[in-house]
Amino acid sequence: MDCETFDLLKTTVTRFVEERLIPNEDRVEAEDAVPAEIIQEMRDLGLFGLSIPEAHGGLSLTMAEEAEIVFELGRTAFAFRSVIGTTVGIGSQGIVIDGTDAQKNEWLPKLAAGEAIASFALTEPGAGSDAAAVQTSAVRDGDVYRINGTKRFITNAPRASMLTVMARSEPGVAGAAGISAFIVPADTPGISFGKPDKKMGQRGTITCDVIFDDAVVPAANIIGGVPGRGFKTAMKVLDRGRIHMSALAAGMAQRLVEESVRYAAEREQFGQAIGAFQLVQGMLADSRVDAFASKVMVADVARRFDAGEKLSADVAAAKYFTTEAVGRVADRAVQIHGGAGYMADYKVERFYRDVRLLRIYEGTSQIQQVIIARSLLREAGLKV
Ligand SMILES: Cc1cc2nc3c(=O)[nH]c(=O)nc-3n(C[C@H](O)[C@H](O)[C@H](O)COP(=O)(O)OP(=O)(O)OC[C@H]3O[C@@H](n4cnc5c(N)ncnc54)[C@H](O)[C@@H]3O)c2cc1C
Image 1 (tube, helix red, strand yellow):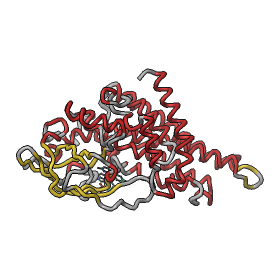
Image 2 (image 1 turned 180 degrees about the vertical axis):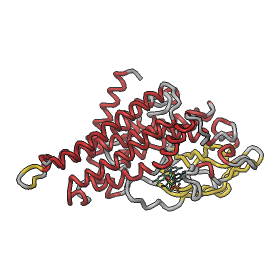
Image 3 (image 1 turned 60 degrees about the vertical axis):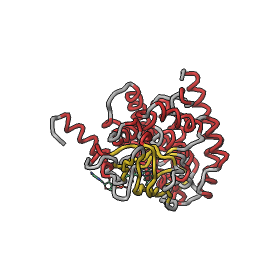
Image 4 (image 1 turned 90 degrees about the vertical axis):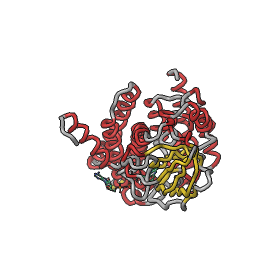
């Protein structure tokens, strides 16, 4: 995309966030759902196709460009971004990165148009951080595989038309090498969905269990056509996804700084605006530093990702820093708002709960620490 077209897209998204999404935040919170007309407007803007190649109907954004758009979407309730999140990110990227031409031609145009929604089903009751421990089985039976098992906390599963499912397909092969990534249409007989999970925050987003009871998919639905490569595909998808998450965290940090500054300038105590007190200024300054550092870090990893650098450890560093930083910023925002910060009428209480998830999914903070430290130690010659 040329610079002028991208700038136009970014301005349009910024305006959409300010004029349509922010004014609908309370409605999403009250109804625990994103209004259908907003989802249609997101389709019309092409937001479902941000990361899908132009040849397949998407906008073909680079990671750096996607990060800038996600930053804007991060400045409002996460439920809006979540509608497109799995389709732009973890649900579709396996096909974009490793899919065969037939798989791309079949799924990407529908996903880019927002006619189909993609989910990513890796986590299981017994396999979270230890993703290579998945037990969902895919047993070959002639030209098909029979899938059995349960996936947990799957975002957008009830909305999805297709799921990228990690299942153990190679008998006798333990760990990562025994896993394949399957494209599974959500209406495949044998698939059922659990009740929507009741969550701490992020109202308007949906997660639930997905249960596979002898769900039959063609062998041709293995992403890339080669069994045993699913874990590698999942890790590539997660590298990209973690930059996306970091941009989301940076966007929300920016919003929370704005909310904090506005309140500090308006609220008066002891005859003056609370922003005049240096202890409040300290909190504002620390939040600005966290938000600024997050934005710069995201821009750096996104640019280097686009340049083809292998940078899983720095992506982990960005995910770790930005998601922890937005937690600190949200905490200070509540503090700056005083008692009002604890009340649902002021949005910082809601955002405080919403951002908590960022430190958990797509790899917990501890898993990011492990990735960063192992990379350093391997460079030093230690086998870890
Ligand atoms: C709202 C929500 C949406 C989600 N959406 C999806 C989705 O769409 N698709 C999907 O596949 N998954 C999804 N997940 C799952 C998510 O990715 C996992 O919850 C996450 O990876 C952590 O796994 P776990 O919950 O099993 O925690 P565990 O792995 O059990 O971790 C528990 C604690 O132990 C720590 N820990 C674990 N291993 C280590 C280690 N080696 N070193 C140090 N500490 C460690 C963790 O950091 C954590 O603090 C979602 C989760 C939530 C809550």
